[in-house]
Length: 134
Image (cartoon, rainbow, N blue to C red; front, side, top):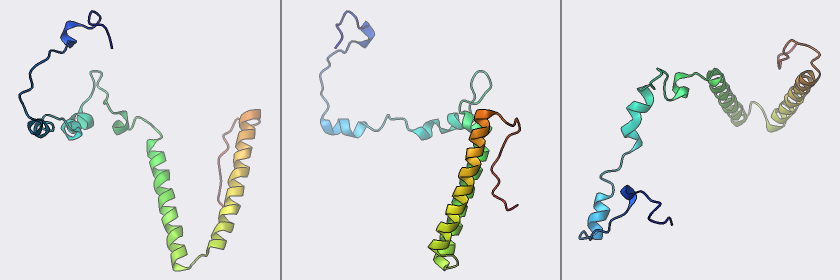
């Protein structure tokens, strides 16, 4: 607790008699609250003094946002496809785990090549994953 001489006078609490009952207080508690929906139009539309949007994600200034969302959608659709194939019996769990093991090994091998290139700088060209059959 701060001493009163350190607190500005506008922050001093004055004691006022409470004539209202507790039921009146509970009814009035939610009347003056502001919700997020009150600020929705300001959040989505308004811009700062510099002309840029206050919420940079809505303006998609992050250049990788679309790519990450697209990847997440591809992963989700791929997992749904695998689940439906397993449910229909077109592919069993053993075949699926074998395919996943093979592709994981390929991805890890390619990742090791990328890390080795980042460390040694053997090639200046970028190295990318290639999961297609050659």
